[in-house]
Length: 317
Ligand code: RUB
Image 1 (cartoon, protein in one colour):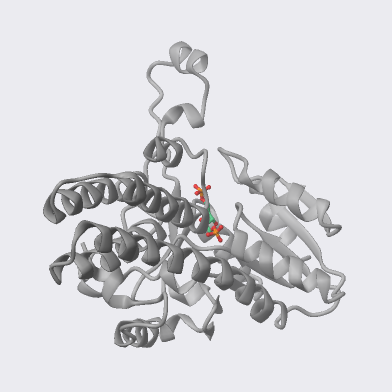
Image 2 (cartoon, rainbow, N blue to C red):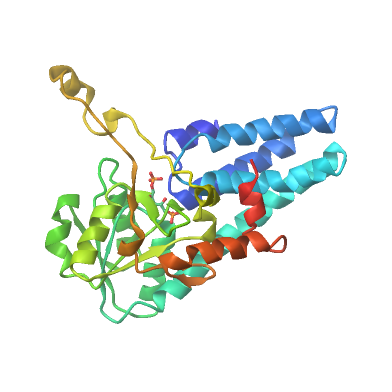
């Protein structure tokens, strides 16, 4: 059921996906019974693997699942009984959840310091972390204006616009293809993040790279709000981040397709923005330029406890 909620995007956005999966795995670990530690651990691992496969691009999903499993596996490998493996899994899930929520708040505080009075901001899609920056800037009395593009085909931009307008922020919606007309009116672009690769490239909702290109052309600051668990460790070994291909029915209705059977569809959900178009990432650990991502990966890997950002856990498969 949790798998379906992720797959059909009832829950969407990389941070929310991660927390939803951590909660689902925690609940599964709490409620599952088994006679032996091995039997129990096999069941929990299989549940984690299934959750991981629900959406391929947002690395927050496997990172969250891996983090939760890492706690349980450590207990399993040390020969603990089922009750202890269960508790270790639950504890890791709770750690992840607390850290993830705290990260969004800290990103808001750090990012808002970069916003100037009266700034006009363009945003794309629906990112909790980016919204956290804009809401905090508003709370600080910066008097910002936000332009949200629609973000077809699923219109996540409307969700962002509604949230910001309800919060009292001056908010406007434009269609995606009007972005170039508005980029010169903007002081900065703020977007969220599904994954960051070792070279500092950003993977986010399809269309992000076009907005980044426009910002680059017009010399408009481009900042990315990203928790460090959006860093994809597998890119260290040259693996590419898979781009999710979604149903063509998101692009056109069945009736139109039937009338035009020779038209093909392609519906990638994300795209890659090269590092040179990103000015900096706003993470819960501070501002990081794209060239600093590799150093951050090393730092995350070195920490082996006391922090949610355990690179070792993220590597776990
Ligand atoms: C959502 C999207 C968001 C990132 C970051 O895509 O691209 O910008 O996930 O969001 P989808 P957050 O709607 O397809 O999941 O900052 O909330 O993690």
